[in-house]
Length: 318
Image (cartoon, rainbow, N blue to C red):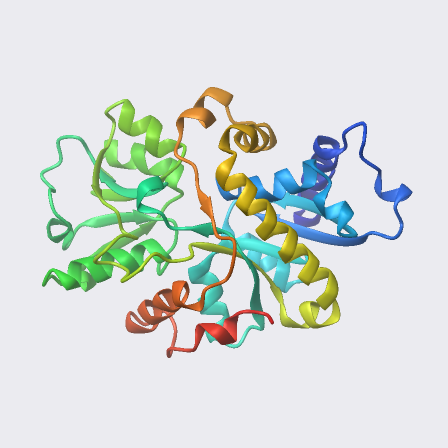
């Protein structure tokens, strides 16, 4: 079932990127295949741009992309060897690495930016909750327990003198949070783009706090990254290096050419072009900086998601 799902999406991607000037896989036997899997997110724009412009082909790579509904599924696919490279939020990768799974980061992706915040903790418009401290004892919707946003919220509440251990968590996709708040099933929750812009504009939700901002993390953090199993990286070092180089070059271009790259993402995930144009867009990192990863590791250890702190530099493939 899972393999069929991946195959269908990968074929769909191939039909999307093969322009008249492109070359089919059968015509380019010298290309090294790399199978990538990710949940749908705006920070795929650099990869889609690189594919459209033939940057991977020029680097000797045949890159295909499969979509999964959650970051957990991407990790499972990479660990099982169904896919070569995954992209997901940093927190589950930190947890996997700390518990002995040989996952290593190979290219950075989404970088937190206060000016281009793409997610936030929200409440109902008339909710009595006005401060993070008011969340104590309340039910909070999050994509996963121990993700980067929930860790950030705990740090904010504890930093203000509260007790974050009183929070009650419910796992929900961000697209379901607004409805859950409206129905009274949760008191607050994490909402991400494109729902964040749409639902705030329509008055369905009210912004409460940026869980990744100051008070949660001491400096801007890397939110997502591309990763692979260490054995795969060691066996395919040259191809992985070329993949990472293309991704980072495409990230620099994508950051400064939103008008050109947003339609690529919208078309790929079948998002209304008008909605895509109005939502806030991500900023992609163009290099690895361990100091932008270490705060996530530190909070994960502080709140018991991982057994101990480790050096972020050990997490990055050389």
